[in-house]
Image (cartoon, each protein chain N blue to C red):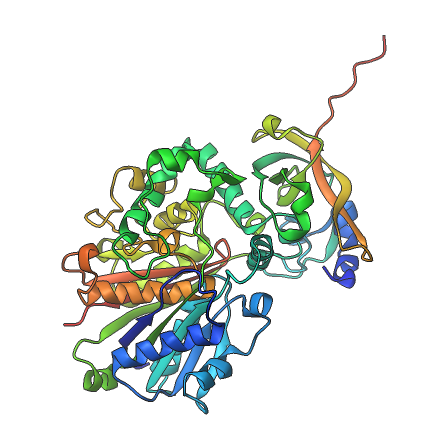
Length: 385
Length: 137
């Protein structure tokens, strides 16, 4: 296995891109990442996407976006793992370079969701769950997270308002991210009064539907050193899985897939949670942020929400999360999210995170979750020397 | 849902037929043919009683397109008395009265319609256990 580094990143604003098509959104991110890396050619393109078939009536994104990005002829394919599609594409790109098959590869994450009506997007998102035994019965993806949140509140004696710090922190951090979907602060009062979607999950517990595309250029570390003054090394890349349906899990309040994925990642990097300087976690819902913090070893079982309540997740906290807004406020363009997370960790490790910079950030972790925990992909990146 | 997919699973949808693992005795629903604990084949049919209690619940005010006309409705994870959890809608209940631990039982109800020319799909929902009637005076 060869050592692999990141030499370029590119992102488009997360928002409502009604004026441009999927392919144009994608090529924008691809060209931005290539420009940042200073390369004009790559060996392969892997596209992370979940819903292009459902929403845009378009599959086969690998060849399509390669062609429209001026890369006709290269190896290209789409990678799908529900909401973890972005990290899955990054993982495939990593494997391609570390195996020695390719030297320079692009991972693109892309999703276009706002071209479709809300309830049709809700139906499409339910495809991440167990179709026959969850979605078919009328349980939406928000509904599954609401079931987890209610049980968590019951077992650990946590109130709904106790989840507010996840939303408040994410929105606060997004204020300084020009690519974020939202630039509006959330207060406890607003959080408490937000409209219920599936009780107990309200609008401000949930990450927003959005369009977005982000891309990353990877190269073998030997090649990277000849191309970049400050390559960011990938020191861990790990995937863990669990049952798709919550009812099939060992314990619904433990993300076993995340435990497996993070343990493997820590082992590869030879570190533990205490060494991580920032954690871009999958805060699609407050409950998932809490369960992720617990699975990754930052909080004991049932204590993830307390970590947020105690002010430990902010930029200056013990374990800063969602440093550029997270899924909650940067936005959650499903298949693109995993790549936005990587881009943001790279920004932090390069010292280019502006007002949200974590001082002396050396190790950053990104974790992308598919469904409500069935695919969990963790990457740990190391700052340039 | 394509009609054949619905038809394939009719035994579990109408009668809560799952499976039992002959090796460890675990009761499995929905049927999966391989025990997730022992990782050995588990294809012996087992019919669940349909009794259980609410493990968690949530009230949907926003839903996928095909369930829009039913909102608000209550979804739940029900812990069946034989062990497994099952995801289902609750019915015949005021959302305000649902609590974790509420005893429930399975009933067969309409789940969704598949358009004017499509089939009407039935399946399991759960309702609060009706209190045993007191003996007639």
